[in-house]
Length: 350
Image (cartoon, rainbow, N blue to C red; front, side):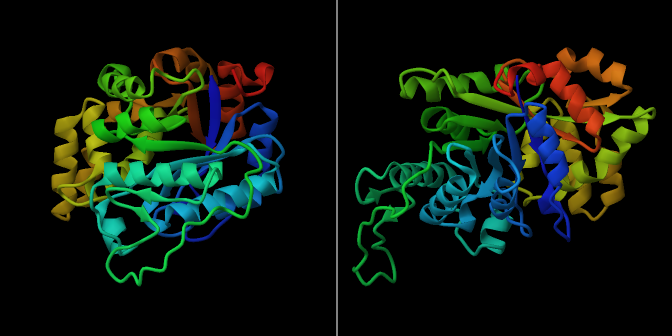
């Protein structure tokens, strides 16, 4: 079982990268460290900083928003960071975000997410592979550009910078089409809404994608997530997670397009998801937070004493995942995860 450290730097008004924690998990055999972005701190820059302070751990995004950059800009950043890191260390997790951010923050059209993702990955592959100048005629993105405003002088180019190593491309998704696309064209999948029955829900979509490429690659990864909190007050720990969950399920997206609400529904809580959104959009935020089920929080986390965390490990980890991104506030939580996953002994690549 591979382990990653999840860094939620994007949620803060100030930026403090926990270097010592990242060094700790590298020494514990963790496979990767993951950053993200919303509409504040970006996901890529902290990885360049971490490259200077680490030697082995993979530097991963979970996720970069594809509306924020062209495929060429994302590929350039990834290749630059990987060169600084020594090569073969960058994982690019891509995602579409939601219409409120895509159109409200980046000023880009929502369009067709599955087509845009397909074009995005294809262009990035061509840039990184450097086999020939990049030409792509896609449903959503084309190079050279010949659309509205073009003067017709775009030229197909090939990256000056050579890749320092392999750069993995993953997609974060939960809906059927994008999940199948991840299996078809990517090196890994970051699932949204993957609970205890995750394989039963998502497996058929993954199989569709794998069948289009001739089968599942041996090294295709599925990275789930787990929260660990060592505490004597389990109820308080659960309650502390509800405001953020209520905000994401209730308000992180529009009424018709909220992927966090959809993820809760896929994990077996459709009625709660509907009610939380209804209350949040009505301005009744405290009631929306209170409506988050204890069971939903507890099912995707390990709360309690160190012994309880260890005893529930196999119960909480869903079938089908090849790795887990760990979120915890304590070094003890990181160490217990390494112990249970066996990364101390197997260098993080078990």
